Length: 124
Length: 110
Image: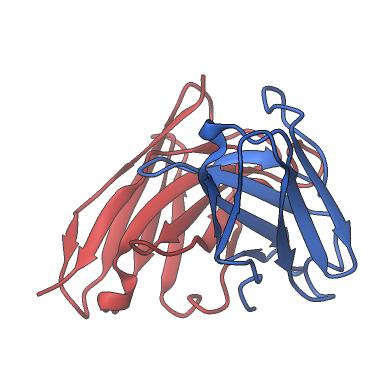
């Protein structure tokens, strides 16, 4: 059974960089046609797609966050990571990692496996 | 890229049906048949209930159904049960490899 687990600091200071890692177990991140994504949810609010990455390193980012986001992949560790720079209180959220089947796979363009999420608070 | 529009709340009594709407534009919901619906219980990760507008993953009860007309997608929950009380989010492909979520709807089973 595929499992995803987020890890990283739960507290980040304003203006600094948020860094999270998602470790995939029970399957390989190097699987054709699966992207891997980050989604966040401010407390009490809705979901926001941050971006997605393929094992080759190909990335797609939410245009509203693109200038501050970097997603990378480490296939040797079966992990992918998120970096969000210049954070403010508005970046306080639960951050989820998830698998995203791409065109040609089901459920297409739908996050089908999710991590449990990790709360990141931006505060001095 | 703007969030898709969902009503903040919906409700129904056990056994009844309730429909939740998700309105976008011709650049997302109306332009592609890649609308998904997620159910999220408090403190849990979202779970996919519907993908490609109307398809159900295995294990999802057939009480859940999806449809689309123009720029608006809909999720219908028939035969409401207590465990259906949750937040529901729609999402859509928005072209250029972008994805967009709706603001979420809190479904209350009265």
